[in-house]
Length: 160
Image (tube, rainbow, N blue to C red; front, side, top):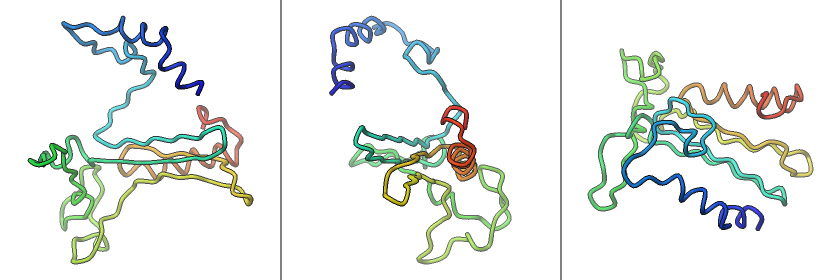
């Protein structure tokens, strides 16, 4: 309720309205309230933990920039290029990773994926950490390092 009140309050609405310019946009992400912008190609991760301790960690991806570069004519949705996650004999992938025979395309197989939305709970089922990330083949390492630094080394999320 407090978040909703803050987002829908007159002061918040006025602040957003003041930033809207009908004749231009800003290239400075801080103008829109963003604190960090990284070079990403189409993967997003959202983590939410509520006051009752419920948590979600959701990762979505088109894979690379604009996915397959095809748009569904019936829905207007940009289709992903998840097939690129399979290895191609003799070719390194977009993240400069050499092909692996175990990841070659074959009937009934799914490609390897680095998506790692993660929720860690204690023995009583209470959420201790919810995390995820973007960055292709670096995601699993990033998630692992943040988890170790937070849970084992006592770092806060920003430090981890």
